[in-house]
Length: 312
Image 1 (cartoon, rainbow, N blue to C red):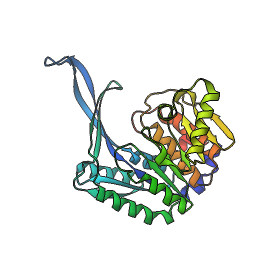
Image 2: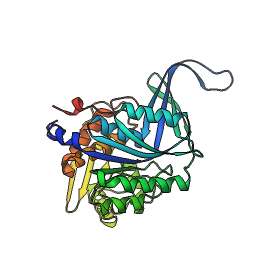
Image 3: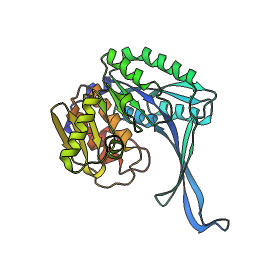
Image 4: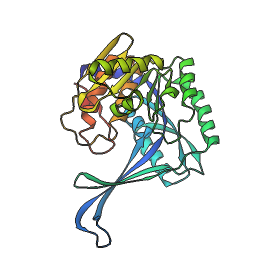
């Protein structure tokens, strides 16, 4: 993709700060050959396991895969999953700066998969403590003078309790700040450069609509109310629609085969952040992010897009 190739050199020099909720994605793969005699559930004979960075860690890994210099700020527990995450990220050229909370368990999502189908997901999570979050905020402020873009990846797990202040600090330093939102209250994201809700998240906040005209009116009203430079609604098979002052840019989906949508939003915001850090304007960045999303949904689980897949 020419738009990505034109920015490759600047991407290599760009500095991206990702903050948010991190998790370890664990996968157990196996075959189902019988039903349990104890209950009407399948028995999975596990033959292979895999571990990957998830949540904000997957955002950071995607940004690093595209060539940017990436720092990840988050909270983990003093436990094995936290140490595994640290190692996986360093192997992916991400600089993890983890606040370790002894009273917190690193979030783990365990997925059991058979014949490419997810049978079960088990989540392990607890909220981080207030003191450790305050320390993370202080470290975030210290990092800001040395970054070109901030990505805040909110998974609603408590790691971005101070997100309104984080956006304010980024604006004070005139650094673009991109937010992947969660929940029904978007007011805490006011002042961000770009908000990237998916269709369901946008509907939860703006309500239902009939037709493109009403959809656009609701989107522009939300953008103005939150004082956003741009609002990007990702719409699955309908592509992506970017709303900025006085204009709307729609990009149709490029997905050839949808295999697994988990982590697609991480790839979108990571690609947007990398492109904006390299100096691309919003419509160009959205076009490259849409291409990246079309690639990553053809892969199993949380995955990354490689430069050679976007280039050319």
